[in-house]
Image 1 (cartoon, rainbow, N blue to C red):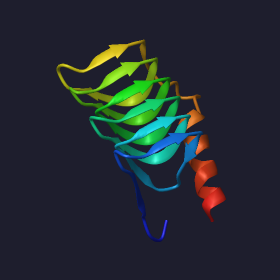
Image 2 (image 1 turned 45 degrees about the horizontal axis):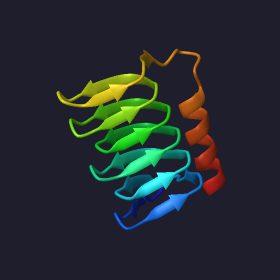
Image 3 (image 1 turned 60 degrees about the vertical axis):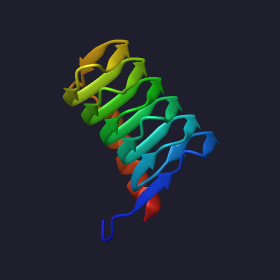
Length: 123
């Protein structure tokens, strides 16, 4: 990628529908739909109702859906309701997860394929 970009959804933003970004994404608002991006940073007051697919994610708010991320950091303020698939996982003490944790299998192309498709579409 020649120039990396960063998109921000502020606390006053509410989106209904899927979000796909070939850039890094910072979410402070509410998204009702699936989120696919290269890197996700979720603010403490935000909520995502849908699946999350990313290369890296730093989650601090509420997620209601399946998460598939290569490198995942779950902060103590996070509240996750759904299954979590990861390659690398860091969880702060105090984070709450209602669901199962499972390492992504070597043959699980879901994150790579989703992010790669975004990059091709952006060209």
